[in-house]
Length: 281
DNA sequence: CTTACGGCCTGGGTGC
DNA sequence: TGCACCCAGGCCGTAA
Image (cartoon, rainbow, N blue to C red; front, side, top):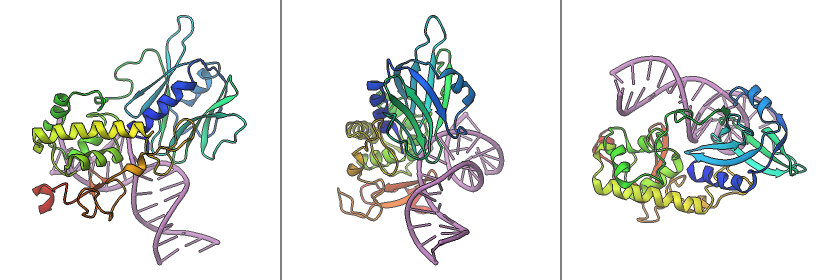
């Protein structure tokens, strides 16, 4: 499941190989996850890649506008099972590969997505702030003060707030659970109930977890691979996510799984004390 | 306005 | 062998 560290890893990998490469030919499989695929079919052939950006879990592949033309960006959201890889054209493409852009160096930029929960769209013209919908702040770029304000002003549960892309952008189920475990905060706590010290601790935990995960090139649970097709290594470092019934590495209590904000949430019942509201229901 | 929740999209894995 | 069912993350509609 590509979250911020996985998407960042893909972005860095693509940044190494895409700029300067021209698209020679484009092939489409299923296109129901693409907004206006005819625009991609028209604009991508002959396009020249000139940059790669990440915004939250979104990838933006910048295309060279050429002489005075409007800028173009290929927006890609990997959803749950999306993969964006650059491979030599003579390597057979895996099943569920739905977009193939042949490049001028004999390689291919491929989009593979088993579930097709991903999204792809060509943005023509300058990137307006509203273009990707309302997005929150980058969790690695926010100050402790801003981080605390965005949580403390809300009565929703902390798990829901961390997952909410309009509050912070890029966090998903894995890294919210890992961050909450590290900060010893129960996922059902309300944002407004967190003390200043807890917010400070959570901010530091989020930063540390994301930085470590980026360093290890993300978590490969089922489908995630980077732009070279390689798995990440952070899945071996998980302390809470996916560890139901296993011993907490801090206190040896059994990790539990409950549903919070409609999502599986893994936590240590001893290190992360439940709020009263969660105990009484 | 905020929050909670259910349903939908798809297909691999699991259990009967 | 087959098949119903669960689940994943984001998004949207609805209700309180």
